[in-house]
Length: 576
Image 1 (tube, rainbow, N blue to C red):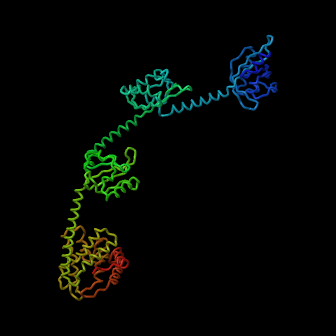
Image 2 (cartoon, rainbow, N blue to C red):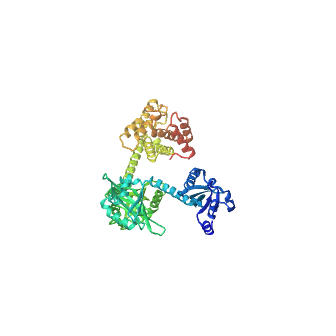
Image 3 (cartoon, rainbow, N blue to C red):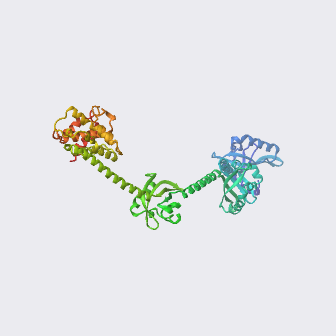
């Protein structure tokens, strides 16, 4: 090889090598040695066949044999070679026969390392595959256009499901995208596409008409893709079917309109509070607080409509609902009208969500008239109660006048019975009923001759039978009077006993009403502890011992236990 060709041989950027017909290396330039990882002195020991990857060996040898046989240059082939250090390189190689003096003497090979390019191609294929997998499986439609040619480069398969048209049709005629848009939306969508897609702020909602005539709502977004020169050469976009969302928005809007119409026509005031501020009120609420329109109230803190004394409880009620301690609260407060006058308000409010944020939503009413009526009713009831108590006292006094030796017995039984009932945990109304029953339980004694009632000795059997009839007589008198409690039944049964040994009807256990069971214990304790014409008072200790002995047999055990606690633990004393 002369010096000129030698210089070209060595300076070539491609790997150049020379082999005999058996593949033994005869020469190689620096690029070839660097590619294969050998030193120049190792050239005689390199064989092209041993460099070939087993997968490429047979194909490469067949091609080399054809070159030698025909003496022509063969096409470029891609093969994998094994470097000296074991690493693999992918090369494009082209071989031809070298002739000297008209005879074929060697094989010249030129190889170019394409390993990096192949890796890049592989990564690109993988990326394209991932991209295709994503775009073909997402619910949205991905699309890519060439704006300079008005050409659709790619659109994902979901397009066919949403538009109910083929992609092939769109590729063939990109304008069919515009034709599918509802005529009322077409102009503004086209204008937005021309002005906004390149700018990167294209985000439009529009309707499309499918071939079957049905409508779908689309949200379409796009952004520009720039080349290395910074020029927009692609427009990429994502379109999604928002029909269901639009339907939901329409339903919500209709619901809000119906709700607002109902609220505005309501006879109650309606309000929404967020962060303590009234953000919505209806016309009725404005009317209640004497404002010309709701706009005059909106924006005010809710406490501005509350008198000073009620602000703490109003603020606490709002805080408790916002904190989730309670979901809803009903209460009343005194409000402040626009002119400073006061108005009584009844309100019910609940924790809710308003425009995506926590809020208190509620109803309120002007209850001023109701309050005045309630106050009047309370005064009337108080007068009735005083009148009733006076009547009861008169009736009790009549009985006491017939039996002066037991003066005050009925009142004391009433007070003791009420104390026992309270100790048992009965509610205040029922306790009051027991007290009144005690005051009246012996009213039937007015039918018993006075000489028997005041007899200082033990009664005969006949006289005792007359006295026993007072329970029946009490019932006959009291049943004609209208009470809120079972007064007549209590007086009728107060001498009945748990085991059925009492009178007048021999009732037992639960057949005896609770009020009568309480009276039975209170009557026994008071009678034994107090003076009688035929004996002195026995004292409270003996009286308690007597009812304790009769517990569960004669007297209700719960009533007895409450009575014993009352006197022994609470140090209760029979009123004088």
